Length: 91
Image (tube, rainbow, N blue to C red; front, side, top):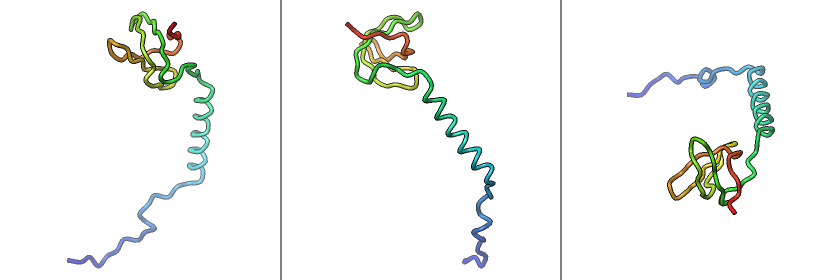
């Protein structure tokens, strides 16, 4: 059976106010500025480091990934997450 009624395309979407678009753009820009001014990890993926933390213990390994100030270290005992301030280069 074929429908004889076709929905009007103008009524399908919700109207968006200009002020809403401006607030979204401002929020996105401000979040970017705050992210850029945050702490940066001085180590790169693939570098050999030693992590010393009272909760995770001391582990030697290679940096596998970075997520903000946190670093994923792959060691022989497994994968551990450290704050970059608890790491030092391996000698």
